[in-house]
Length: 252
Image 1: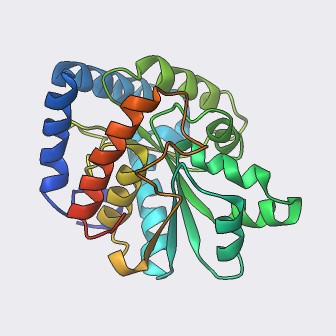
Image 2: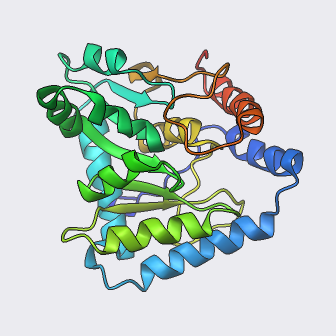
Image 3: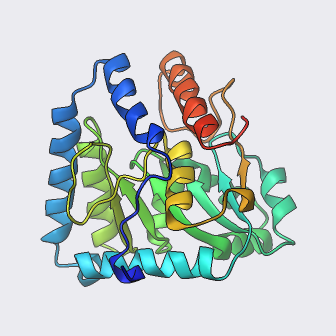
């Protein structure tokens, strides 16, 4: 299989099985997850945005593989508790950045020269479309979006897709889902929250585990850059995130 046909598969079967456990725990519907995924894929496949065709989405995956894997580099994954200081520390290096949804908003808190530098390091944004102003800024800057469908985010991804399509240069898209089904034009690399799904995505792309640093990944607090959320529920979700990350060999 060449990289333009690359399917992003989970590097550990357990990160897929945990999706079923999470659904059962929260009493979420597999049918709704599947319905959202199929609807998102259909809308993007039928979009008039040329860069969103299945072949161009495959090329986006290939481009990310080239940038993050073929030219081996350290990769920082920004979680919702990311601070300005943590970002500033990695800027002198050649570290590239994958941001988990709203965490990308921290880049706009940097001084202008640092902010421009940090934005240039962003490889992609992993999003289920509820990251707020940071995610909107990324869309407007044309950052590749790894857009995720789940059962209760159809309104959110619909709004994000509408915003993205309205840009002079719409951002490249890669589509992910969380069902056991095979959906042509979508991927399921595993994961549950934006943070652990970003790690699953990086690993499935081929980034080596030892090259990945988790910044702003906390399980004891709801990070400043989390979307609007119920704190109690979010803290429970973070424990599931921790479980996924531990399966993958990360200590959080």
